[in-house]
Length: 236
Image (tube, rainbow, N blue to C red; front, side, top):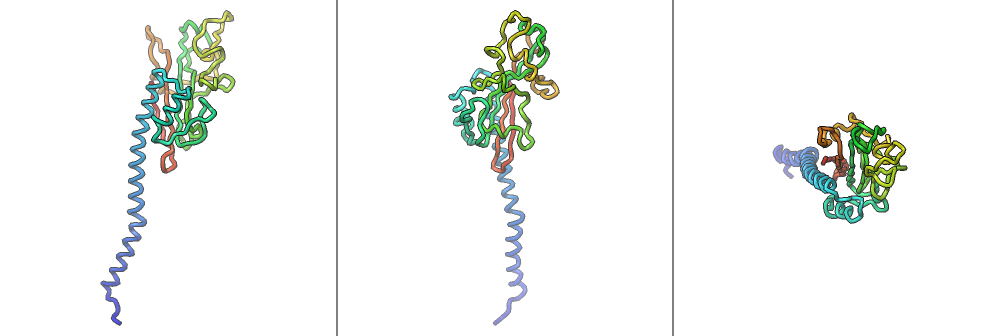
């Protein structure tokens, strides 16, 4: 029986080398390109989502209501597989690949008639927060944590508002010399300028040049197909 010459033996080795190179180089490269393309597409979609939700939130769409939360989970973020809150109306659930955090910040102007030298004068405070989706994703994998907290003793778990009085809106002086609202009297909801320069720089300016008013801030956390969390935010 005639033996194989060196050219025939080399042809077999070339096939083996091609398979090895494909396995260790081309397959991972193709997978990397596909993953990068998917993440880029998802990033663009997240930017659009966070902008849409931020504008709706700033224009008065109340996402503490079940119907609006359903709109968010099934329509606006339906392609992301977002899950609802279950029995937690405004504090978020624990399942699904996405969380949307809607925060409302207020700068307490020292010249505000309702303040009257209150303890929060000259500070930005967190006066409302609504979380929809998987709250366990917030601040995971080195993503930013939402700035500020509302103490559980003051949190209205139905509306997401900080309430020491009947509601979270400015109230007239009660006659004791101290306003009765959370945003004026609860130092636990203060947000330092150093911790959130983005919000501070986007506060509206009142007539007369005094900074004050409300800022609506929306953050989105999303776990992609690689298990990494993507983060986007928007201010209105």
